[in-house]
Amino acid sequence: NAGVMQNPRHLVRRRGQEARLRCSPMKGHSHVYWYRQLPEEGLKFMVYLQKENIIDESGMPKERFSAEFPKEGPSILRIQQVVRGDSAAYFCASSPPGAGAMNTEAFFGQGTRLTVV
Amino acid sequence: AQSVAQPEDQVNVAEGNPLTVKCTYSVSGNPYLFWYVQYPNRGLQFLLKYITGDNLVKGSYGFEAEFNKSQTSFHLKKPSALVSDSALYFCAVRDIGAGTASKLTFGTGTRLQVTL
Image 1 (cartoon, each protein chain N blue to C red):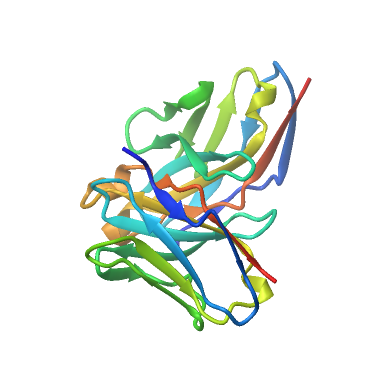
Image 2: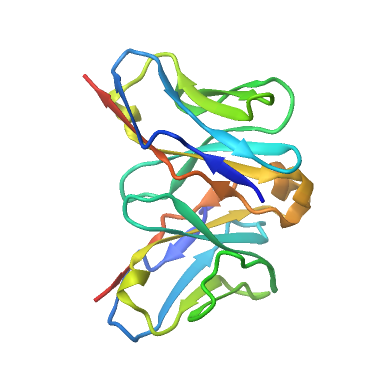
């Protein structure tokens, strides 16, 4: 089992460009979480998705940020018109479906470090 | 709303001494509790969890944590610290009452520094 795969590991974007971050959950997992970590800070919840559904997006900025988890393929976190303040490490985590999602630990990817120049 | 507090930004311990990293939580119902560790430029690694049963939970690398419902705490402990334990530690909670819609909420993290 390859674990949670995030790519790219490092991403550099100029202000105003778009950033696309990808997350492939562990095999058999259908729940995906995205978190943002600013330097020297903790993890901030952004969005919780199940296949084709957004369950909780209470941590997502109202503008420029969107996330999806299609029936096929990885989950995508998309940031439009990036600004310097978007520079951070973005982590994806996954957990199995159903009741197992509650008492099973989430497994994290290595993260994507976004730098906006 | 659920929340986690880690009151110490940093904990300093000498190698061989016991360590404690504090965590308190707030949920409307019953909690599932987790500890993760993060090494520099890496993702989070799972250490241990409390779901139900024995209040003392043992996890990876000799770590353990004690669930205290009355104090709403889940402190991480290790009897004898190693320099290699130096890392960033995160406590997390999930509210059982919210069902499968419940997200995992993290504390702000505690940096553990173990010195010779």
